[in-house]
Length: 70
Image 1: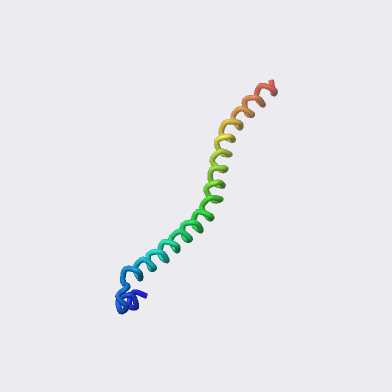
Image 2: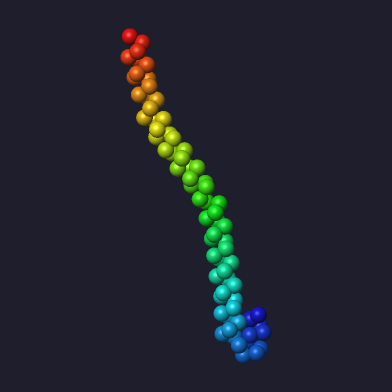
């Protein structure tokens, strides 16, 4: 495309065409990467919140179990 644009004197149009194509491919690649990244981040955040909840409730249950044992 670049060689044809240079030969016909339409180098600017050929470069714009290449730019549009490359920008479209970059958008598609980014959208695909985000589609895979979003569930992974959600799972990671769910795990972090779960660990925080466990770190709060396990000692609480241990204390309550000690009170009931007496």
